[in-house]
Length: 180
Image (tube, rainbow, N blue to C red; front, side):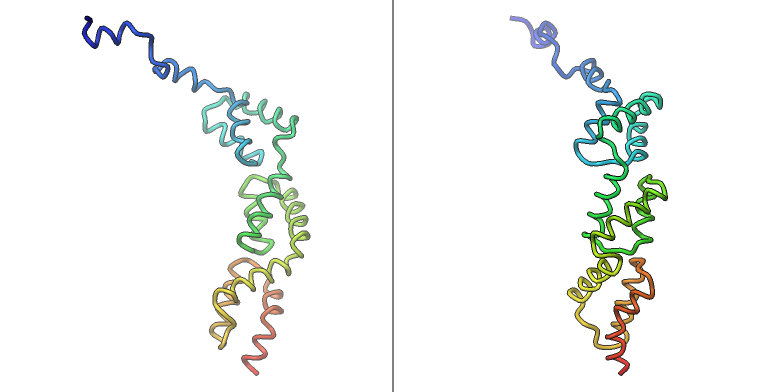
């Protein structure tokens, strides 16, 4: 009988030897992009930076992005609409905050404006989103009983980047009752 080390050497190599691991790691930029896009939407700029971070050649990345756009898998407008709709339903915020987020994700200023316009229109405008944020604040903290609690609500809505005139209109009935 052979010693254990000699038996191991004579057997076929394990399927996960370093050579096979290297072969598995040689994915193309297209394969990586499609794998990422099956999990979630990306912006053009976001997917580009992810692929470059995986050490794909810039030329390969550009070709892959063109293919993904041609196949309909990569669409900045769809990405922006999906992200903003989800974000505003989860955490209501004003238009300037929404635009800042979309531009941080790599969308152009004009694309961000168009997407924000469409999403805010679906949600009842900026006033509708403000109403949602206000209702959530009241559900969590209750109606204000004094000027200090009304000020906390005002500050909260201003931090969410809603326009001052809309916040004041929303709180005007409370302020009239409290100063009354």
